[in-house]
Image (cartoon, rainbow, N blue to C red; front, side, top):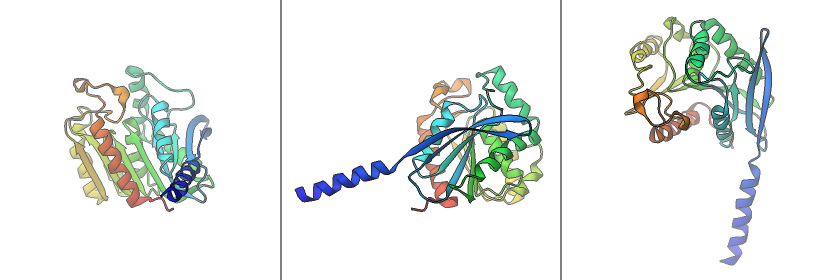
Length: 260
């Protein structure tokens, strides 16, 4: 029995040692605007890997999405937290964040151009598999991820976590090339009215989509910093957070699996 223990522990050590998560803050451009993104990946992996492009909430790129990027990197993906607002533009929660997000919700052309810049930047990296690029986002970022698909980017998949579903140009859904996953809080007061129009948009365009609605769940349900008071319309829900992450990982296994 003792002879078996030594190689077992050596094997465990080797598995742990193989994970070498590298992170990098990067700058790139959209027109004259400098954008600042964040990349995380396991540098011990060889060859090209699928990339998950993560779009931030209405407060801009911060610690929350950076943490998610590192989490996805441990699973073998290249994770790129994109910047839509511009370097240094990180508004606080409330009216300032709503105003900044509103600039892009009301100007979908600019939203698409900022997202396109991130797509073009990460696609050039030698460790990225350009045939398996995923766009996903949280809250405001979910809207952006969907808009990337509507713009016709060749994405393998699109996922929205408690994201806005409105679309001033529903006919653009016909441009979506990849599969879509929507992870939605069933009693999210801001997004709930948008659900019927979104589903009609997807159905009319014959998009391959899944729509998962979590009961008793409001906006921002994946973010512990949202608190736990659902009467405010935004609150963390640990059960829905866990379920939605599992649904997303299953989705990735379908559209962009990691090849060992």
